[in-house]
Length: 474
Ligand SMILES: [Fe+2]
Ligand SMILES: [Fe+2]
Image (tube, rainbow, N blue to C red; front, side):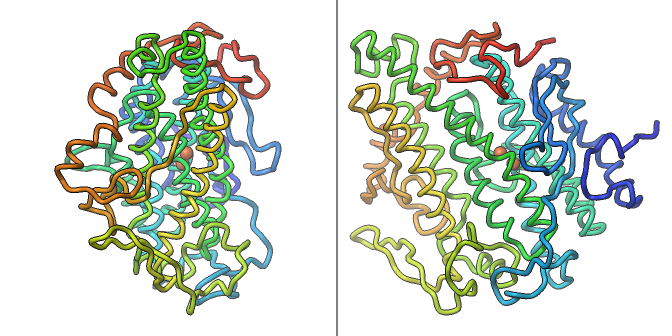
């Protein structure tokens, strides 16, 4: 049966005027759907889900909300509108016209950047595959599915670039993006954090609050790229990413709110007593935060990186909001502080800024996460509770860079192996923490009802009421 891509894949890239490209994507699409069925959300094929679908890139009118069966979701390809006369904004090509085709000598480097970004998108869908079975409400189930289909669309965005600009190599990489699996021993996803399990909804909210935020910073750096199709793809992906971050932050805030309400109503504070009332004690939430934050920090790579330096000098990957930064955008003479470890502990050392771009992006990210933590603490303050959340030191529980193989406490003190082994469960979720959280994960599917461990949201999605039937289960 011939598939009508002109109507099947919404796009603003003129797909039906490029038959070769259309055929290539036509070959890839059924394979993508096979992947979705095999590795995407369980038990969800026949449910009608109230989802937004990107239908254009107009601000304000870019999305359409309606009931959709997920395998029928119209995964589209959208690039933000071109900017007339756009120039490369940094590095050695600063001020030259941005490229619409891949410069031949940068092909392998650029392909690697796109594949690495593209690989995270299906990975997160795989990580979240089982969560539907324990959803705390239909509202939350819908949000999970929304994040899932949009990560699928982000995969489409990267696969489009591979197919359109990288010939046979690009097509092979697009196949591989469907072959790797999160957590698989033989063919894992490329980056560590994307092979970690997301077994419960507290982990899911931490992932969307913290790891999707890494996505925001990586996409923002790529949205500055001199390769214009990549820049415009990432600009539009960022529009969708905002909702993923909202799902994470509001999910954690609602969990904290519910715990605070129960603590106050019963006049209890001790974690055991709090747990006995069926809500997640605040120290456990802190340990989940420590875990996800530290694993996500590794995604930025080593403090000093010649790869990051190359990406910048060639004009392929910029800094966060490069255009808004007031400097020479070449960084030939600038320096940046990176952490170093010695016998006494951590100190900062100035190194050439071009080498420290990973660290700089990580610092920009940490500052953004801190704002979210401040909002959680305001909530605790309003509730009249003394507990405060605190981000661990950036050297805590790291596997990549200066801190790999070292042990630091959350306040940045260097520890011996014995101290670390003795204390790590104060700071990271233990097996019994995970079992407790898992014990609360009971599926709730009556419209307007919520599991006992989480507060309802302040409002629904797209002006619908909170008790709207966000998912019509099959
Ligand atoms: Fe994404
Ligand atoms: Fe995302």
